[in-house]
Image (cartoon, rainbow, N blue to C red; front, side, top):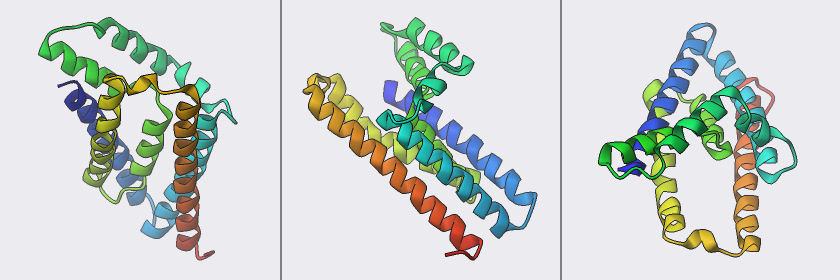
Length: 177
């Protein structure tokens, strides 16, 4: 129930970012606007990836934002709930917590051709992260700090690689690649 709430939040985020992308595409020629969206998304993903590794303060800036603090407060008020509805709402709140990987995939949803594609992108991310989060809940969170650092490093590198790929897509749309 908790993960259903979290994935539903991701779907809403993806839908909103998909609507934003669709609105931007109606504002100009499709190739130019999509190229600009890929350019902006690529740069933001690279910055977030660098922040995930700790090379930039992007994570700290996101977490200390007013929205980040508000969401964290709501999340903490639901911790320890025993009801199904409470667990669902805890998952919903978790979906909106400041998180670099979530923001990176939301930025990827910004490049989606339709709002439903954006929602689908975020749902697939949520489904892909569920096994890891379940394993963490069952005790894998007690992994050695060196192994946790390796996982964080791989996650940061993957976000940066996707950002670079988006830059190449932008270059292709602008006729540079």
